[in-house]
Image (tube, rainbow, N blue to C red; front, side, top):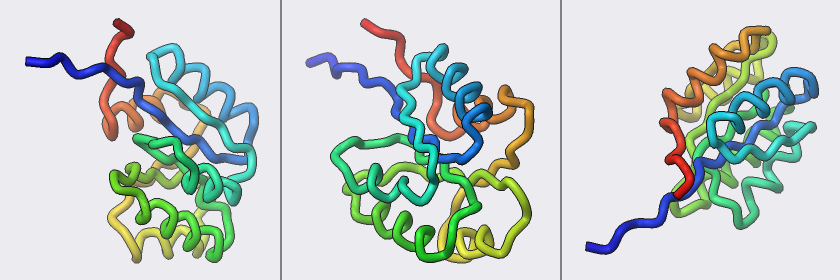
Length: 131
């Protein structure tokens, strides 16, 4: 039986708060995740349309409905689409579009980075240790 090569879990983290993103990215990378940060959430569609296969796309809810639609369209085009987690910064009507169109996971952004890391691990599991 051929042993399958292990692959790092890849996370796209698109949120406009650089301090929060840095804390979350550092913690996820310390667990073995490969994290791509995107400082402008509306740019996430470009990354999701590229060749990288993300396991989880974590996107801020604070983007306009057109960008939301483009992100969902980009995700649906993938043969193996990433799971989506929407970061709720404030209760806003744009987050309702996501909830109505898909069965998505949401997470409220707080100073508790460990709660976010736990939510990520709940969605994609822990990465395999390097060989």
